[in-house]
Amino acid sequence: MKKLIKRSLWTLAILFILMNVVSAFHAYKFTRFSKTATVKTKVPAQLSFGKKLSALFFGVDNPRPVNKQVPAHPYQTIKLKSNKEIECWLITADSSKGTVILFHGFSACKGMMLDKAEEFLKLGYSTLLVDFMGSGGSEGLQTTIGYKEAEEVKTCYDYIQSTGAQRIILFGTSMGAVATIKAINDYQIKPSCIIIECPYGTMYKTTCSRFRQLHVPAVPLAAFLDFWGGVENGFNAFSLCPEEYAKNVRCPALLLYGALDDNVSRSEIDIICNNLQGPKQLSIYPLAGHNDYLKMYKKEWVADVNNFLLTIGSPNQ
Image 1: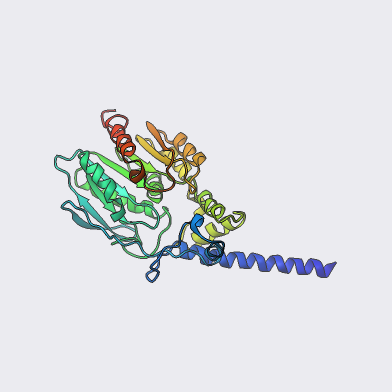
Image 2: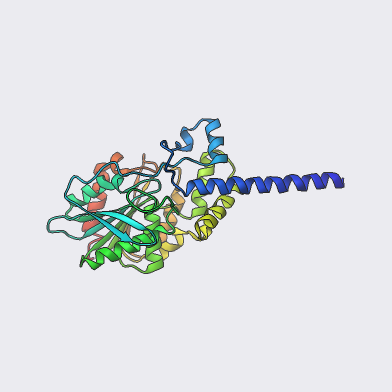
C-alpha cells in the first residue's frame, strides 16, 4: 500500500512538473512573435487532431505581424516613445471633426485597420493608426494581450491631446479594446467616447476558451498558462480583468460583438456592457464570429458607428 501511494505521489509530481513545463513553453510562444515563422498556426477549429495536440504541447507559431498595406491618403509616420517605441500613421481629414485613434487586435498590425480608418475619414475624422509593441513598425517581439499595451494607448492619447485636438475617440478591436479599457482605468485618460469590438472579460476566461476550442479541459492548464505568461512578461495575468476596468469607464461607449464568437462569450460582453458607467450602446452581429465586422456587416457597422457618433457619442450629449 505504501509503495502504491508513493508511486501515485511521484506520478502526480511528474505530471505537475510536465504541465508546468508545457505551459511555460506555450505561454512564451504565445506572447513572443517569431522572426522566422512564415505561417501562423490555424485556429483550433481548422486543425486536425494531431495538429491540435502539437499546438497544445508545443505552442502556436505566430509570425511577427507586418504591414503589407499603406494608407491611400497622404499620411505622416510618427514614432512615439512609450514602454517600447511604437510606430503610428497619422491621416489628417479636411475640416476634421476630431481624431480617432485605432488599436488593432492580437497578432495584427495597423495596416489591417486601414479599412476602418477609411470609414472614419469619410465621416470627417482624422485617424491615428497604431502598431502595438511587437507588431508592424514598432519595437520588439513581445505582446501582453492588452496589459502593457494599455500604456501605449495612453501615450497615443497624450500625443493627440498635445496637438490640440478637441475631440479624441478611441477605437479598439479585441486586444485593442482591452488595452483601451485598461488605459482609462489605469491612467484616468478622458476620451470623448470609445468604440470597442469584442473585448474579453478576463485573461483567464479567454485562456479557458482557447482550451475549449482544442477540446481539452481548461482546468488546471488555463491557470498554469496564465501564471507562466505573467511571470515571463512581468505582470499578474490573473489581474487582467476588463470586466472590472469597465466600471471606471464613464465616457459614452459603443460595444460591438459577433454572436458566433468562440473566443469571447456573450456573458462576458453583457458583464462589460452592464459595468460601463456612461451612456452606452451594444450592437450584435448575428452571424459574425471573432473577426472583422466591417467586412461581413459593412452597412450595419457603418450605420452603428455613424449613429453613435451623431447621438450618444456626440460632445453635445
